Length: 195
Image 1 (cartoon, rainbow, N blue to C red):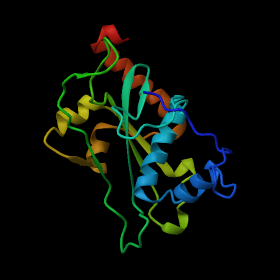
Image 2 (image 1 turned 30 degrees about the vertical axis):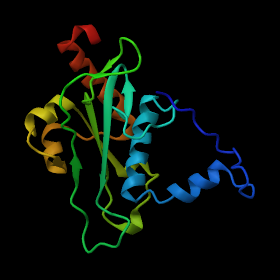
Image 3 (image 1 turned 90 degrees about the vertical axis):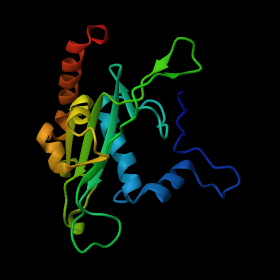
């Protein structure tokens, strides 16, 4: 399912000339908030992969479909919206969905809900006064094939940053696409029909 993107300058009927952009600015300016940070991280990954042409669908089977592969984005940060006595411990929930087919309303289309690639995104700042979420130099990205996470951490509902670092190396945003491409090439070697 594809959603049509709203236009930023679209006026909201009967709301004193307010636009969709006014709403977005009001609702999503706090990128430190965990919900907004997660959506922002999904956007960063999608922008790098070129998969943001359609509107985001909440709770879709994947955050992005890239080269026919399901990409799941997870984000975390040391700082949170609320005041903290110490930085947060970094952990990411992981999806352990049973690997079963989901029939769709499209004849012949079957979805497999498990992601094939995870991208764990960390806003790597521990001091609130240094927190510029738009500074890509302050983000680290850990792309990894999902089967590695699933086999190593099969009984866990979340993984810590240290556990992710045992199976994935961090990259900056400008190296992220190349790194994901490498993972997909490795996945394709094991599945020649999906190359």
